[in-house]
Image 1 (tube, rainbow, N blue to C red):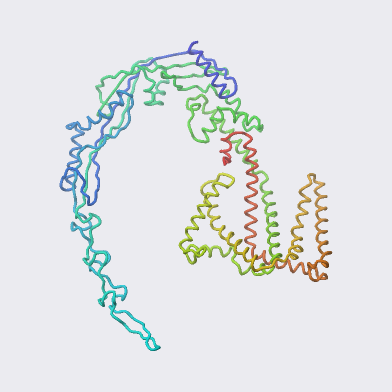
Image 2 (tube, helix red, strand yellow; image 1 turned 60 degrees about the horizontal axis):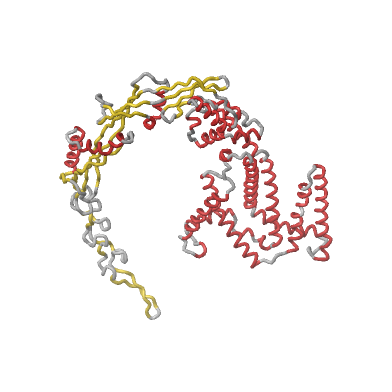
Length: 629
């Protein structure tokens, strides 16, 4: 089988696997060439002097006296290496870099390590001017400090009791024996301390080392005219990687200089290239290959028609076509490369052209936009409905608590509410009290521990992946409000259990007004048809009224309300206590309503949208929709 037939079979088979459809590529005009190239490699060796500071410690090396002398000696030696008078770096260069050319045909910038000579010099310490000591910072050189016991007076006040009376007098200070001064603990009374800059030596030491670096330079040129016009682009694109595809390497002598390089190597090589004319849907393009491994240089977009035949249906409104396109390997790879900003051979080698790639990405972004719009369609009315639903739910719960424990509800204004939270939290951070009877500084342990747990909880249990800023905001919110919620439930719960007797009759009569309202909701929600919903609401209203009337009828027998004649007024007075309870806690009531309505509604829509998107069986689509979690 000819090489042309082999390439044609490979392209058709590979195209079928990538696109799922036949790729009717026909190759003609096989054209092989073997251009001769000349590569010249070189290095410029740079030698420099590096200064090192050692403080009061004298390092090993050649002692040059002063620091300026050491610097001068090191720079003179570096110039000697560069001029070639000393071959130290040349020999080191050949030893380190020679194998790169002779064995691996590789070349790169390399450090040449340091020369063995290190020149050491010193300067008088600028901090102590060579004395090795500084004036004591505690006593300012005096050697003694004012006695703290007597404040420098030499006497202390003494109080004693004699014969049922209190006597005040003064005595000589026992701490300083009446002198008013104490020996300085920092300097031991000397008035001076060891200089910390030079460690007491009086001198600062510096060393100067000589380092070298070999920097690469490269040139190449054709030594024959038998080459394809695109060969230059291939060599520039692959750079030194082309060395691995060369054959018949021969080291040659070079006379001319190469950009001031200190060392030069050069060799010639033959680079096999291959070119075909490819016809796809009556359109001709070129396929170009180079190197003994037939590295693709430019595939001429031979898969464009096959890829576009599938991708043009993407985001066209047909879910089956969308799933087919997203499951096609070529389209899947193009989208993933664009979303992750990575390179793939399919695009780099021009098997699919940039125009088709841009069109595929554009259709995909249209699909993502469509799905995002669908994922939040109708969320506004649901959110408003959620506000009413959760507002009534928390109203019902609050009223039941106030009816069940009316004395607890009447005292609610004396308890801490959310408006007092900033003041409480500030007192916690300023350590005005300690949590759980522990030392006040332990407060910070609780706060940072709760913040850490909140961050981990949001990362693990929040239903979707969110940015770090939102994660921190949620974690901080939990850290601030969770203690308030926890302490409120704990202490109020303990108070209800120990100090208040539940009034079951009050909760039954008053709670029926709120709990019974859910009969209307059930009557409207359960039926499927609109006319049966109307009937359901009527039935629910009848049951609601019947419930209230039934409680009124059984009241004389069970004594739910003491005075039957003033039943409505008595129920109203019960509800008034609950109304005041809810009024005092209205901020908590509103915040709970908003949080539940917002987060639970969004979560419901997000989970529904994720189910719909997951049906496309495309991980990259889940990533684009931020639904990986």
